[in-house]
Amino acid sequence: MEYAKDVLVSTDWVAQNLNTPGIRLVEVDEDILLYDTGHIPGAVKVDWQADFWDPVMREFISADDLSALLGRLGLQEGDTLVLYGDKSNWWAAYAYWFLSYNGVQNLRLMNGGRQKWVAEGRELTTDVPDSAPTQYPALQRDESLRAYRDEVKAHIETVRAGQGAMVDVRSPDEFSGKVTHMPNYPQEGVLRGGHIPGAANIPWARATNEDGTFKTADELGALYAGEGVTPDKDVIAYCRIAERSSHSWFVLRELLGYPRVRNYDGSWTEWGNAVGMPIEKTYSEA
Image (cartoon, rainbow, N blue to C red; front, top):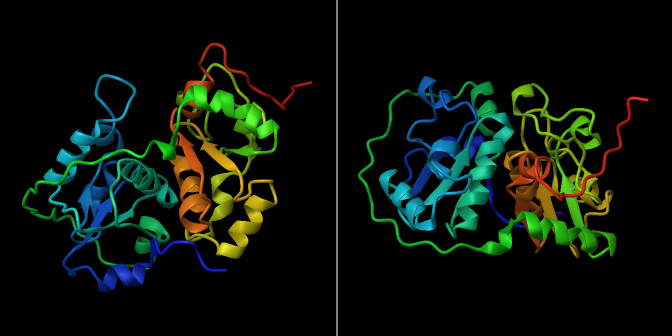
């Protein structure tokens, strides 16, 4: 079985197209200083928090503000945007989802991300491309790609009825409630541990190989179907703040072609701190 969409490019392909007009590289890392230590020649930098998040509210920038950002980066409507980053492309996938949500077209993900490029000893530079600003056209959001808290709460009944699925892509300890934070991130814990009722725990990393590349379509299909997450269902994915779930959203929607997949960007930082939201907890100290 082949991937549903042609949205992955290899490191070889990127190396061969570094100077191809209309192909633009965008690096999105968790560690925002990585880009400055060296990046793929021609790549522009996006800071997922400073560039995508509203500076006052816990909300995204507007579609118009995103158009302005893309224009400042010198990107044009017809460009093919190749995204890559650290953490096996967590944040590159987050950017892919956010750009898709805002209607940006012609997106690709470099398979294996920054770690694969570096492991292969490929060229890095500290030179920042001098791109002339453009007038990026207005964008229109696709709300079918995003889930909000109350929609997630209502979705619990859909899952119970067998018509929907919920995918918690966090670690097993986060899912069970044993810990209230992501591994190695104790400063980012929440008040309550556990998971959303009815969710299946399919950690994001189960979709990748050791080098950060994605597993085959057959392997991915078997992984999700084996947990009851099938293409006929309305699927919602979540994690802590949606970076890991964006990776799984990419697998389900873009690589496997599931028609109805939403990313809950509020994720556990919202749900685990909210009043009136039900949780399940399978861990017990007894």
